[in-house]
Every structure is written in C-alpha cells, then in structure tokens.
Amino acid sequence: MSHVIASVAGRCLAAATIVLTLTAAQAQTQPTPAPAPTVPNASQPEPSAAQLAAARSLVLASGMSRSFEPMVPQLADQIVPMLTRTRPELKANLTAVVAKLQPEFLKKGDEMIDMAARIYARHMSETELEQAAAFFNSPVGKKYVEVQPAMLDEVVVAMQTWTQTLSTYMMTRVHDEMKAKGQDF
Image 1: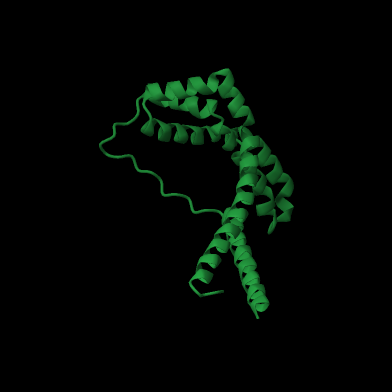
Image 2: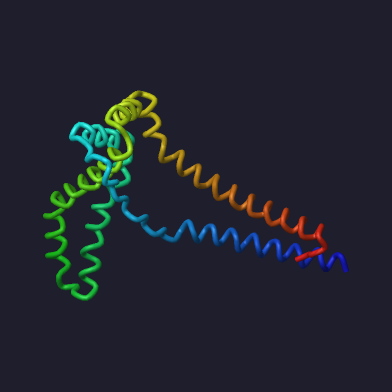
C-alpha cells in the first residue's frame, strides 16, 4: 500500500514540477505587457540639455542602444511580406520603395535612444550620468559591454536550470511537510 501511495505521490510531484516548469517557460516565451509609461513627476524639473547629453552618452556607452538597433530593420523587413499577402503583384515596387526609405527609417532609431536618455536623465543627475558613462568608456566598462550579451545568455540558461531545480525542491518540501501533517498528495 505504501508503495502505491509513494508512486502516486511521486507522479503528482512530477506532474506538479512539469506544470510549474511549463508555466515558467511559458511566462518566459509570452510577451509581457509593456509597463505603463512613466509620467514625469510634476515637481521634477525637465532635464537640462547637458543632462540629456550625458544620458545619451550613457545609453550609447552602456550598449543599451544595441537592443534598439535591430528594431527598425526588423520592422522594415516585415512590410513587403505583410503587404504582398493580399497584393503579390506589388512585391517589386514595394521592395524598391522600402529600400529607398531605409535610410529615413534608420534615422528613426535615434528617437528611441533619445527617449531612453530622457528616462535616464529623470532618474540620475548629470554627474551620476557622466560617472556611469565614464565607467562604460573605460577599458573594463568596454569589456563589460562586449561580453554582456554572452553573459546574459548564460545567465538565462542557468536561471532555467535553477528554476527547474528550485521547483522540484519546493514541491518536495511541501509534499514532505504535508505528509508530516498526515496529508499526502
């Protein structure tokens, strides 16, 4: 009888672990809703031109702008396939028009850099922004920016493994505590 209970408990534990793991994986693959835009506090003064320049330098030096760079080409690459689904005869002309407009579209990427700079400037003083940019412009800061994508990739993999291990551990502990109270599942 205890073997049957242990078997059922083991299957329940395994199922719960799978559900928790799949839920965590699904949460990682589903786009998270964009956070509400931060509204500057009315009591906060608008950032100065020097503060915005320092913030822009930080956005560029920190490598943050790298995450914006592929967005414009990716959006541009979607135009022709999207519009030619219903109008395939437009493909040649659409391709030419998108290619012609590409430089104009690429300039739009600067808008996101400026938006990020404005956000940074609302949260940090000009001196803090300059000091942070100085770090990222230093040899160690440049190294950090260079290796950051690879490090983040490894952290994501490690986090997935850790999450699975933690999920199993937590379910085991809950099971053990419930069993100690005479309630097995």
